[in-house]
Length: 225
Image 1 (tube, rainbow, N blue to C red):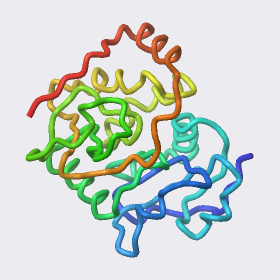
Image 2: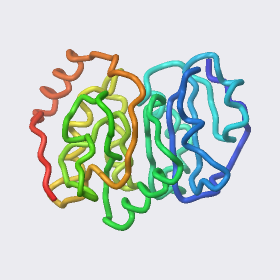
Image 3: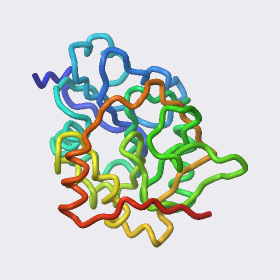
Image 4: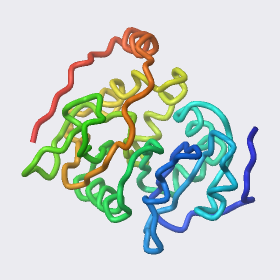
């Protein structure tokens, strides 16, 4: 499987939203007629015809999210230079188009390398990723694989981690070291809210531990204002 529905679409905006999606994907709520970003979809099941009109950037390929994104970006390396920022939400994230645009604005305004929207419901793995009231953003050393947003430079530095294992578990503990989070260039953005529509389902603790040991990483999470 590796079906491309379009031949050679070109980017029309400076920002990219890219996701691996299936038949129950929530991505239709991310986009509107006024969206100022390009949507890229990698369909991991047989639902590609359902989404054929959602974007010219669409491909069918089976596998795990970050392995698929890695392969997609390697096949389309020009995208790494044509977009300024890359948001990579799971397909069960509900977020409004205006919130996505605000995410990109925060990335640019605060010169962030990696960031994510805050979660507003109970389906989370890490408490610091949840919304904090009376806050615009909090600096951190950890942005979760659920929905990171990368600057172009940060993505180029971290892209190799997308292929380190199948699940992606563990690589989000690595990103902070790679981009030097002590420069206050990673954040949870409370002014950009998102909703995780399903409980966390995958459990890849063995891969997580192997990754942590391979790079001698800490699982301690820091945050500051």
